[in-house]
Image (cartoon, rainbow over all chains, first blue to last red; front, side, top):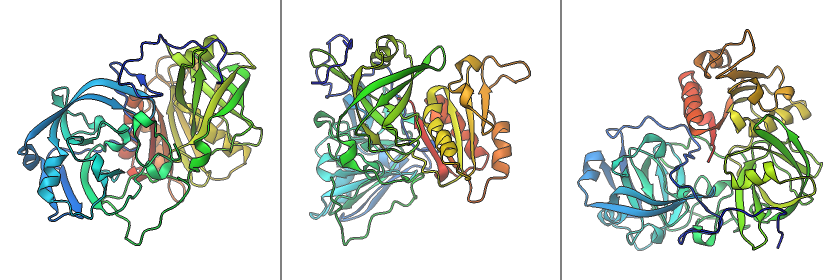
Length: 201
Length: 258
């Protein structure tokens, strides 16, 4: 063990649920998009599920809001090191969108993409089973543009770069295809509890 | 992940081309390894920021704009790790430099500012991420605020060290002259912008359209590659100014603190 002289660190009150190497950001919610925040209004927003599906589908703002409401209350984890506890997002479970489009048996992975063109790859299994949402509310209020509003993907059990802001769609594929950060040295899956930060972790 | 899979299927391309594709391929196996680093020098930059020089025998080299992850370990095995931008230009000295703000209650930066002295050992892994890297190829327009100047200074130093002829300009925002990191090193490529106090004859105010207009009304051949680094509020402000001044969104790279 390579101990650092004179380093004691914070009090050892690490809360349960804090993944390895993370710290509790408390009330902060840092913004970490790599691109210019787009001017995207609810009227401009659409969400499409395409690729290996029985029927490609596109929802606009009103269509999406007619889907059954679903919320996530829990924790989120950013690869830069912060975790945020007890956040509340509201929107629609991704399962509802996927069911409407009908993934083909050959679909194993997806690329989630944003209206800015940002992409992230995910195994389909990480997007189903009540573990992923399209959300437009944070803590009871409309999601702000810098946090991905009007609507973003939320996949809270993976590092948050997978939770594509300004989400525009999901393309279902029969193979894994790296997204933006994954092509820039980040881990293909990004499970915070296994500390899969970078390629090779 | 050292293998590259090949697919016969055509790669999926979203309807909108992503704003800012990465600049370089990153060697994952290099960045995956924690390496010992020894502190060799501490230089005060401003009342709130100091530069820490580290000897890293196994350093694989980096490009300006990249960062590393740094880890401190307590006696009981507790660790704390943070990402820091590299301040030094790539060279073959076997050293890298970081410039850290002293964050109030900062667990890692607090150790650096209060406890660290030459000879102390820490661990690093990197370099990480190719997104904000500048290989020195395209004209570079650099906009930074506070310690957001750190990765941009690596680019300025690289430009000088290699005597690159590609255009490079930097606008750096600080509260006042005493808070301007690397003040002694800045040259004619840099325009400081002071938001609270300024030397006599220099205006006080935020980065504004007027600062960018002369650079963007007559961009160099091929256009600028813009790099923005600072707090989220600065990044939002600066990137909006760039877009309003005509800089294409797909040529704006943003690194926000956090």
